[in-house]
Amino acid sequence: MSDVEIFYHALTSAAEAVQTRSSDVVLDNADIQGDDTGVGNPAHRATLRLEMHRRLSALHAAVLDRSGDASAVAASLSGIASRYGDLDRELTGRSEP
Image (cartoon, rainbow, N blue to C red):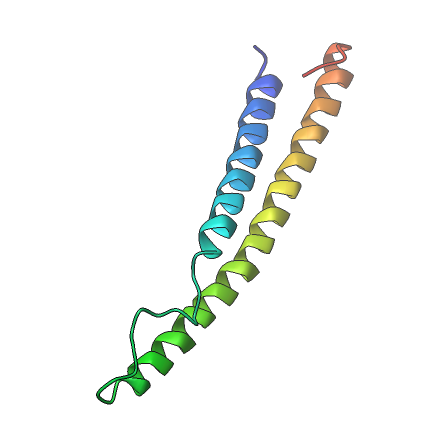
């Protein structure tokens, strides 16, 4: 296995791992709902419930923002890996890295 092949496989594995983790986070994020805090309103708990709602909603939004960034990183890694494939084809004349 050439150095280019090793780097190619490492990059494609990293891209797949980032994309998989990003998808997992988006799925887990669907379970985070600011509306259902598990805290009722009796005996002056309205403030606690509102604060929990605010923080869970902020967490939900942050996860969505970061998952988009993670997808962009995975796409960049895939692009770099394809360039390694081009380099390997140029150096070896083979059609696959």
